Picture 1: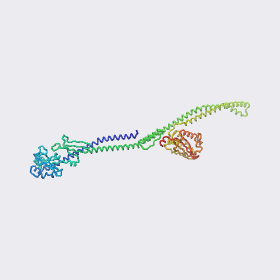
Picture 2: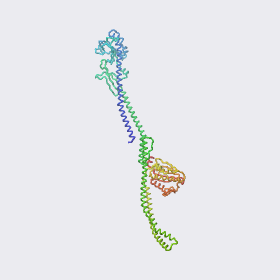
Picture 3: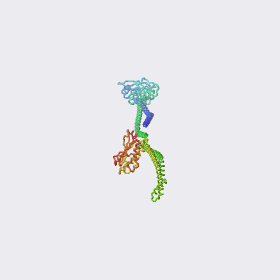
Picture 4: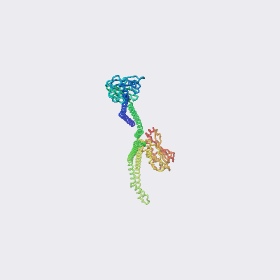
Length: 608
């Protein structure tokens, strides 16, 4: 699994866990607050409905006190005012008071006046509040005592519940004794109360199963609050049921889901943003590093990673890698050179061993030849010849000397045959040594494993050999990614030899000059190749020598020894499956050496 996938999954997991935790926190901490607010709202609605009914009772009670504590009412109960009912208990007067019933009861419980009006029709309809003409002593409307206080409550009538207010009948000075009870009643207009309180409620018959006075029932959409209302006799008379829509909890749930949706959207945006940032800041650079390492693994070329100069940990990692790659390349280069030198040393040791074995007999024969030349009798022959040249030599002495010379000549002739045989042996041995060297030279050009070569780096290494040469300007135009296949050490030695040859050509021209090293992509043997061109402004090459300069022993410089440089370079390039050739417009017009080698596979992949 890729790093970016793992990162996205990790971020998705974090967002999912965060969403679950946030949902739990909101559900367990915030939602109860919404439910409490909703319960308080339902309780306040119930209280407003009850208070509205109690307000009706208080209004009726206040009106009843005004009439109960009045001399005319007191006189009416004493039977003194015959027009009291006509003056005070008319539809208009009761409607002006906002009541429906007028009740007057004497101290003995007799209903002296029970008159009311129903205003629901166009014309008021007379009605009664009490079904009895005589109230029992325990009836709540029979008030004992003369305390100037009113009472209030609810009472059931055939037309419905009535808010009742009643008080003892006293004089205007609130003096007694009480002549009975005077009460007003007002039919409860539930619709009007709903409009005033803005509470959806209704009055139902009181339960007969002894239910509690207060109950709350929660539905999916509403909260139903029930309160049992007592009548003036203290017994349950009705149940007030209010319904409160659960808008608060619905809003709370909606708020939670909106918050969760925003959290999910924010998490998605966060994941997308972090993924994009990670892709730009980390992942893309890691992938580039991976591709670079894969390229190194496939090609073996420790090419530095281009620095992005961002100043973060990955930039430090790239810098550390480049430093490590440089150190490894230097170590590998040192090992390569060491192996090359060791191989050359071993090869040289083998050559020297073979040559020494072949040269030892030559040394012996040569020593024998030198020793035979130093023989005493040969020295005596020289002296004899010298004495024979003396004119004063005696004849006897001269005859003896001639005889000695003749004998010595015979011996010299005999030794001459031996020397000829020794010289033939020497010639054979020298040819043997030459054969050893030729065989070794052929073996040195044998097949070796080709490697990827950084052209720019090798040119820089070889260029160090000509630094400091006055009057010579070196220009290099080599792409940093130029790679060829070959043998790095031999390639560097070939470049160095070609550059030194260009310097010598410039000096031979007798003026300051320049060297240009450039590269071009060509086809060689039907395959992609790089043409490394070294052009100088030296004394040039005659047209008839463009081919012979690469032959063994050929040289255009008197001060150069052997003429092996370009010949060795040509052989080395051939061993690398390449080609080395020269171009020149003639003497004094400079020359261009072309070093053609196969292009490395990494370059081909990048070009594709």
